[in-house]
Figure 1 (tube, rainbow, N blue to C red):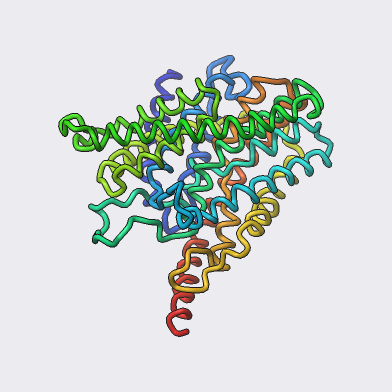
Figure 2 (cartoon, rainbow, N blue to C red; figure 1 turned 45 degrees about the horizontal axis):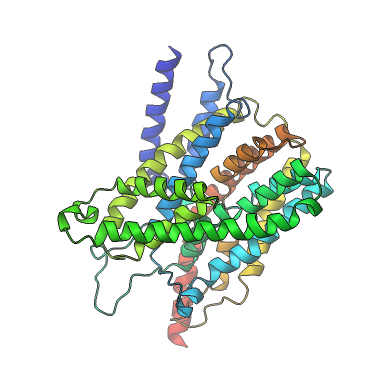
Length: 442
């Protein structure tokens, strides 16, 4: 009977996941919000004796389920981004300037801000750092409403010899590219928390962390991702025998193989696999940037991501009504509110200063776009993975409190960002229209 109920709930929830994006697009509501609500109702239903939704009791499952969800999302983000990243082009680096600013300024400011706030409120230093590191990355899974739609191809865009596929929406580009990169870049700080909890004072491990965890593993992740992406690009598009080119066959399952190869090889080498998967997708896009095959792969990955996200949101919603929030307290509320309303928006706003678009052709952000980009740093599945990973590698004081606070942060982020994104994006479109009129009249 219990198994039958599981199938019914999953089937109903999957129908919701397919139907809801269109149904709620005009309302201040998001698909993740509804799925969390369904999960909460499931959690209130009678369960078999001894069964629990506690993430601590199913840590291995939670770890690997969240890991798989983030990996699939990162491949989808990398395939969806149209703006090229050419390592030897200064113009290309400048076009990605909002991303670099969010990663180099806003993310460290967020980690420092949450760490200091947690420590001030009485958390042990390693616990405060772990909480900050786990909440640092914006989420490529739950932020679809503020991300780019998907890869443009020659079939979806009228191409001329002088036309290059690129992003036209700077807000969506900045938030999407940030989410694609900061999942991997949060890992060094998670490791710092683990080392602090297991080896004591940073004076014992600080230089090792700086040289290997912060620099070495990042470099390895980027390098392996570039190599794997380059090799796969050759296999997909450049094999001499046309019948062996997967791009011509249109087989989208290769995107899943790319995730596994890139992630497995990078982890085996000791680098950051999350970072490598995103870089692999970006490197593959450079082979034939306008090919229809990218749309096929992205569509497949997007469907797989929907299923994995569905499972994670249902479980989080069920856990919310089964005790995962039991250890949250006033400190949790203060930290979550500060992160969502002050620390992230303030840090991102500061990082984007000077990126104003005053001409019709400039690449940058208007004041209104900067506000939107600063506010929509959605927290989600990546935070679950980092907490599960860290608590499985070291003992942290108040681990139950950490789980409760992370769950609260994700739920509040889904509700706050999900309920405001539709009116915010409509306002942004009106703002852009007015801005273009002013430029045209100038």
